[in-house]
Amino acid sequence: GLLEKELKNILWEHMRSEILRRIISTSISIILAIIFVIFIQNFLLRSAIVHTNEMAPTLNKNDYIMINKLKVTFNLLNEGDIIMYRHHDQIHFSRIIGKAGESVEIRHGKLYKDDRQVNKYYAKNRDINDFALRDLENTDGDIIPPDSFLVLNDNSNTLTDSRKYGLIKKSDVIGNVCLRYYPFRSFNYEFNK
Image (tube, rainbow, N blue to C red):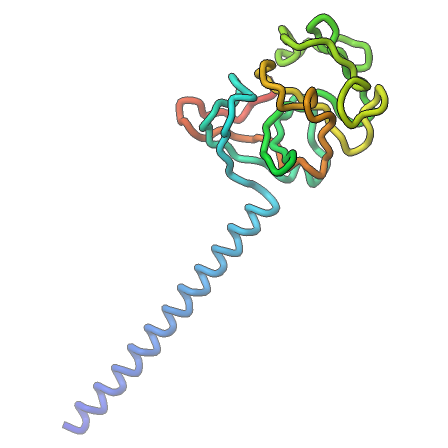
């Protein structure tokens, strides 16, 4: 009787300490996973859903995409990159056409940078009215100032780009589109070719 009772108490204490150890271990794992996800979301990658067709046919409404935040942080954005940016509390997606120190204009539907015609696929057959930098909102010259971008949509019928908003400030850029993962048939990670 007494020995059996003592063994039960020892066994119960062992089980309680094992359960407590597992609860603490699992809690620590969950907290670390949450911290890891928050770190990734804030500093590295972000998932997003495209809500408009402003970048069609490259990105379409309801595409699920990943946004790379590091290219903004380390000033690695390039001409042709598709960026996600804020303008008046709305999210937009557009393609970088011009960067700081460049002159950009559209003449007769053709894109010119620093007076040379651009022959990239996204610059061809642009159904856009002619414009020069000085014609855009919040610009006062022919050269893009530091920490600014000229962006255009692939769908040239939508005016939610620099033609309407002027130059986009680097501080408004959230990141560049690095992956479309849904719909699966449209999986893609190369948007600059």
